[in-house]
Image 1 (tube, rainbow, N blue to C red):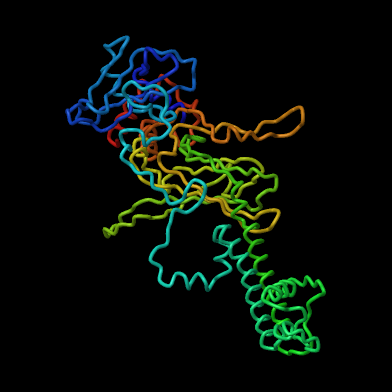
Image 2 (image 1 turned 90 degrees about the vertical axis):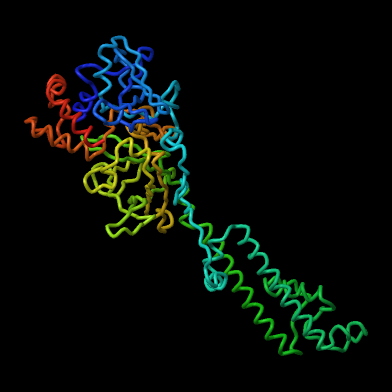
Length: 492
């Protein structure tokens, strides 16, 4: 099937290439007529616009013509070695969508790094629900009795808040407990007359707590009691029953505070959220063909040697939807079926793995072409879940991809190599986000499916898994190319 679309890029055996770019090819892409100047393809349809990109097969020599259209004025410029063939070549509508659009379709060199720099999406604001690092871009506002609800679940609140607030509560809980019990010990001694007896030099007076002569000594006794330091100078006597009761109460309170605060600190340190920081998602997702089927792919990886057990990946697309009744759903969530290396969503997560979503009839991307991808507003949220091998706790890592982060006509480079000197497999994470360009039709999966159906009607017997060598170049150019063109013109 790959050869089918490689052949469809040519029109009567000719290709649109620039005379000055020996390594670049230019393929025509149908876009709406710009500037309102009435320029069309001759039949009232959209005019072709040329996308220049680097071809992966460098051995192909440049030939013939480069046709470009100014996106602002709509004027066409033809640089042709043989201008007589330019008129019919500009009807070519299938080609390769490499890397991204050039910095402009006028005179720019060098690839774009974001689609939002093109004229289609320059006015688009980059909104996302999930940030690339996995945090949710959602703020809860106007919640009734918010503080009371948070205090009712104080443990979760202290675990979720930032570290500076947790440490502040940790320190204040001890300091306030020391001060509170110091005041109680001072009041016990003051009410019993221990301070007055010491001031008068009464050696026969039996104090409630020995060697408490003021608030400072009471604070020191409170600190020693709560943490069972026991220097030996100060101790409770049998003179005051209330002192014995406060001694037992402070001991229990001290143990409770220590257990509570240590539990909070340990919970924050051992949160699975921190384990998710070492789980990686590729910076971009790509769309290309695999086994003759258009697929959306992204890569996941784990930096640690301790593996994620029962790892599985899920994906959802969030976009606007209007129901049959006219109801507008601004954040409609739809599941996307994903798999890994021909299996299900379960991963053998020993090295970076490419997760694949097949763009079939059940896919939400089935009707999107390369042109639609520039204009569509959606967000693909991907989640990796599994059990941490070292702790047994469940962790989840998240990321998302906007249309500007989906590369059409790209494929991921391999990051795993075998080192013969050590006999080990090495993962090079410097290439984790690297992609290379591949020939990919610009049309949507639905249009692609209809082209295959039309070719089947013509007696070629093509199926979705047809091998790329099953149809000759000459047959496609001479017989089936007009059918492919007509079908895509109707759809685009």
